[in-house]
Length: 119
Image (cartoon, rainbow, N blue to C red; front, side):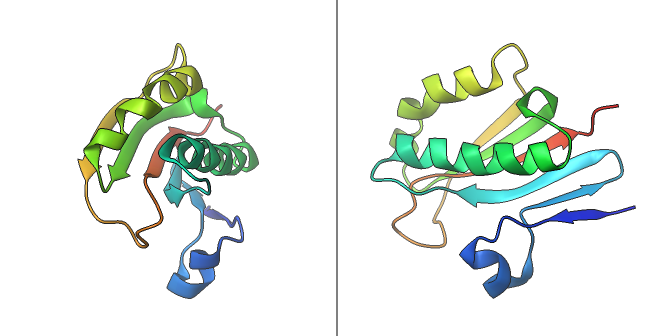
């Protein structure tokens, strides 16, 4: 069984994807950008959107096994570390950070996660 979760984000309909897909015992959350004036605000906003998708799938950040971070400027990553450490707490996932271009220059970070479905 496959469950698709939409957050109603502007790019979901334009590009043809959903925020998350629950399948095969995993929750796959699409790359997620956030709103805000700086990278930390955008990081928090993206995590809020991801957290909502995980909750709708019956999971939480404690269930995340993999996270990928995409940033146009790798120097922006370090200011996000405290927020990320707080979010994942005692359950840190495997992680990768890649410096690359994002869909719009206003975005400073994009985050995607894979979580196990509890149970």
